[in-house]
Image 1 (cartoon, rainbow, N blue to C red):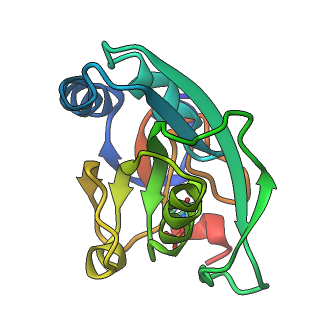
Image 2 (image 1 turned 30 degrees about the vertical axis):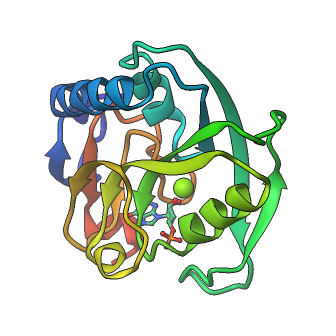
Length: 184
Ligand code: IMP
Ligand code: MG
């Protein structure tokens, strides 16, 4: 779905499809250099990472496997609590594998902090993070993604896998929502 199809729902486009493609090409090249000769397993976090996983993986020129996890934060709060429940676990054994977690966005960073230590505890040889976007709060957290697309302001964004109430994941760009969408 393109901008022209979204009516008045989008307030501002942050990154176009071409911006994203160019950024992912650089990230993929870096990852290909770093993992040359290593056993690479990409772990995508459902559902937000599906677009990043599909496009980033195709920019990587070394052999790899792909697997998926689905997690959810415990508690009713809209803020991430840091306590995570596994909704869908990996099929692959990560023992002695070089794991690269692929995520859409780091907000508080709590989900990824938990996921990283969970995969390390299973005996992965290494666990790194590739995230398309990072918000300011995650910059303060002590989790540092090795591969990062863009640092963005503290605004709610949608598109390219990111949703608002499960909508807008299929936008081919990343943008902010107009206030009327929230009922504002
Ligand atoms: P945290 O880093 O543990 O706070 O949580 C990150 C998760 O919150 C992401 O994987 C997204 O699913 C969701 N999230 C955070 N910020 C946004 C946003 O601006 N738009 C859509 N989803 C978001
Ligand atoms: Mg997510």
